[in-house]
Structure formats: C-alpha cells, structure tokens
Image (tube, rainbow, N blue to C red):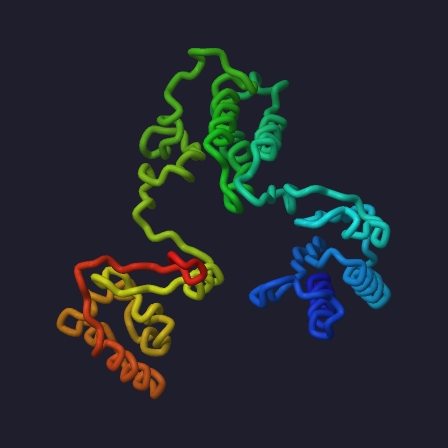
Length: 332
C-alpha cells in the first residue's frame, strides 16, 4: 500500500508538469491523463520532441532523488507512434526501441486486431505448460484437473482484455484436448473417447466441466447470451458524448439524446431496478413512468420530476425506428 501511495506522487508530478506547460499537450482535450501506473509498471505518453524528453528525464530524476526509487532505464523501452526515430531522441534516455505492436502486462497491443504472431505466443505458452514427461503417469481425473486449473486459465487474461480469434481458440482447444486424452501435446486420430462438446458440459449434465473457450465468442450457445452485457462507465459516457439520438418509435430508453438516468438522477433513484430498462413508449402509455416512482421524493427529485414532465409534453412517437447519429461525420 505504501508503494502505491508513493507511486501516486509520480502521477501528481506529471499532472503538475502538464499544468505548468512543461510537457506539450497530447492532442484533443479529452485526453486528460498521460501516465498510467500499475504497481511498478509505468506507461507515459509524450510528444516526440527533445524538450518533452528532457522534461520527462528531469521528472524521473526529481522523483528518484526524493523517494529513492530510481528508474532502471535498461528495462525501459520507447515505442514511437506515428513519428520517426530521430524525433524520439533515444540518446537522451538511453532506452531500447520497441516497435508497435507490442505487449504490456502480458497483453498484446495493436492498432487493429491482434496479429497472429502475438496469438501464437499465447498458444506456445499453453503448450509449454503441458507436462509431457509425466502425462502418461497421470490418470484421466488428474489430467482433467490440470486442464481446468492450468491450461484453461493461461489465456483468460488476454481474452478479457482483447479477445482471441477463432484460430487461437481452436489451437488452444486442440492442445487441451490432446493432453486430456493422450497426456501429450499431440493426439492421434480416434484417441478421444467422447466428443469435446460433451467434455465441456457441466458435471451435473454428464460432462467433465472443462470450459470451452469458443463460448466466449459464440453467444447463442450460452445460457447468459440473453443477459445484457456490462460496459465501462467511461465507454458509455464517450458514446453519449459522440452520438445524438432522434426519437422514432420510442423503443429505446433515450429522450432528447439522453437517458433519464442522466437527465434526472435523483428521480431515477426512486424507481425500482426492475423498471430501469423501460423504453420511452412504454413509459408514455397511461403515464406509466409516474407509477414506477416509489417512496418519498427529495426536493431535488421533485424538481427533476417537473423537468421530466415538461420534457414529455412535446414528445410524440412515430412508426420510424429510433436513430443514432454520429456527430463527427456529415452523413451521421
């Protein structure tokens, strides 16, 4: 905990340097943070100018002098993004150059979809964990435990962050299937005793409880496929800032480009959770949105109630579906 608190001081130094103009702005005003910390790992975004590189070096030196946490530049790297090697000023920091795409905290980073070469590294990591020398010495139950506790957990971290392609999922499943039935990383044809789909069934349904990675991609076969997917608040806020919503048949829960959760947060808090996804047209029928409000209302909630009432007076639905318009292109 103390280490985390100390590292937060470094983030404050970068914020102060931004405020004082020691570091050049990164671009759009929406980019408010240039330093990202995870334990002792630090990612810093700066302009490719010698002035910014010198300022960065000075900040790290000041931080090291005050805390004793010196930066090991031999373990650091510089990754140019849309700039040349000369602009990066490698001679100032003395770090090694790493071209983009790269990896950070074990996660492959790329402009586009993750290249197959990076996915191959994940497949190789699974293959290296297969204990070939003792695979035949383990029973089927023992190999099942290793498949579920080791081989199946290796790709989870990357899958959560960026997802794996169908090719990578097939390659990993091939390794897991081979070790389960033959105790090695390769399996001759006809060695499997039951189909892989049956292996991946829950134990109570006659399977071995091995999770099938493909279920993370193909939604129709999952019991939770009909449940709403969760998204980060920052992503939702970014979507709301970039999109205008034109009300049509009222099948969405947006009004005037905003959800009622945003327009009237205090009033929204008085609505039970089971009514949170009610659409505009559902709320307008017999003024059902009023009946959804439960309990006592605060002064702020009453004011928001009046505001919502006035907003709804001029609302009319049509036969056309609701439309989402992207603000930053002429054609929407």
